[in-house]
Length: 120
Image 1 (spheres, rainbow, N blue to C red):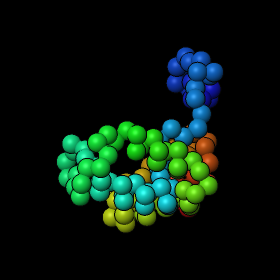
Image 2 (image 1 turned 30 degrees about the vertical axis):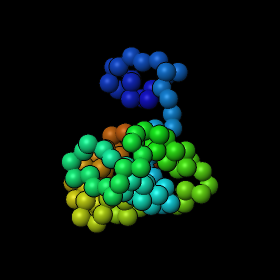
Image 3 (image 1 turned 90 degrees about the vertical axis):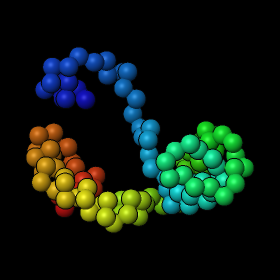
């Protein structure tokens, strides 16, 4: 972040930056549990189907799933293809195959090690 700040001329307080993953994807068993519970949770969103609304509020369920996702029971990390499906994964890869090598050169970050497309 210090390097980014220097290159862009942005001023920031490095102590104000929170590290860690705030919006991490669900792990294997958490995703299966979430998909199961979705059948029993009403939400006013497009294409949401449910069998019966046993849980009138979605936020408590989401908090439980987030806690479960950080436990040893949550399972393994899913590949992007398992998480998003092959078509969306292929689309993402084709979009970023050309630009990620330039991004890696510009930032000096080990994007290949992080699984970025186009850097294998």
